[in-house]
Amino acid sequence: MYLLMAGVNNYYGYGYGGYGGYRYMFDWTYLLVLAGLVLSLIASANVKSTFSRYSRVRAMCGMTGAMAAQRVLQLAGISDVRIEHIGGSLTDHYDPRTKTLRLSDSTYSSNSIAAVCVAAHECGHAVQHQTGYGPLVLRSTLVPAANFGSTLAWPVFFAGLIFSMRPLLTVGIILFSLAVLFQLVTLPVEFNASSRALKILENGHVLGDTELAAGRKVLGAAALTYVASLAASVLQLLRLILLANNRRRD
Image (cartoon, rainbow, N blue to C red; front, side, top):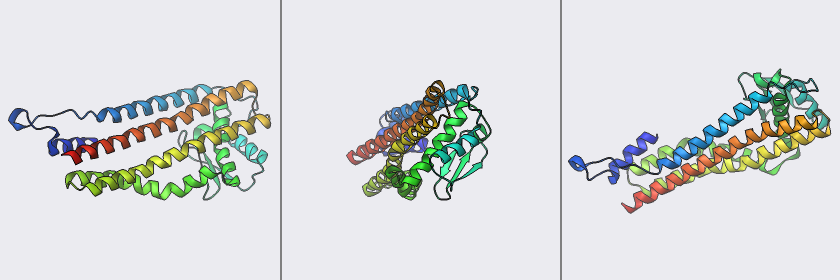
């Protein structure tokens, strides 16, 4: 899609005036995309490195991720959430629709500090669901709109550039903004889930102080991926706005 956008920029006059009446002109807004990509890659590499490091450190409690999840749910007074095993690495998630906690290969059967903390984090979402945590409710409400926006934003915006229709440019920006809003609301949900998880692990004496410090590093690194993702999306949104403004001046 970025290559297509470059073609559109050239088509609408950003590259005329050189050899044969045409020359390529660098679109500096690509730097925004590159900055977002770099942030995302750094955050992803950091969480993988941190998880890998503490996935080799056995939790003194001896619990696997599945056992720790069961314990955390019990300590939180939750008895109607199922725990299931799914494939993959770090694909762990809580499904509020079915009240199901799904733990990945790297978490379910591992008795590492990383596995225990990741499992507890997902339990934190289950606790949020049970207590009606506001940001989680809002995020769940935004899911359809965010999916709709992320799917149609680029095609609509691209059509606006091709046909010189300013309303389509505006609609494309609004649609993409819905996806950005979803990511913004996701931040407090993820940070709060980690906070709840660590508190339960500490009060329930599942992990010791040193292990909790390691757990904070694991969950902190995971949280930064959401921050980087939001930053990348905001930069992309800024790029759309700049491209739309440039088109209006033509």
